[in-house]
Image 1 (cartoon, rainbow, N blue to C red):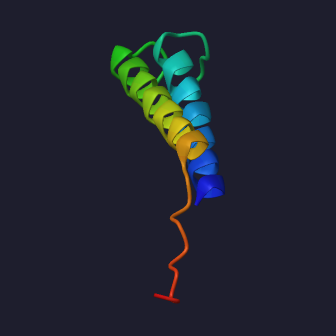
Image 2: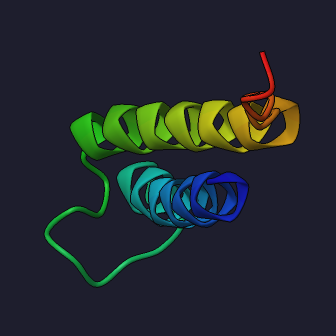
Image 3: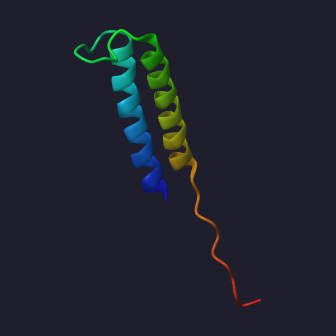
Length: 69
């Protein structure tokens, strides 16, 4: 589960960064370039990705069940 959270978080951060940079006009050549809505969507993606990565760091597996009781 931890690896899944890291991978998903990494994808969100990378895609969010591309969206953000296109939205603010740093990356050109797309219908998204210079549109502030994409910058906001990208920033949200970066935040969600950061949250997922943080959740992966803090993830602790459940304690195994002791069936001897």
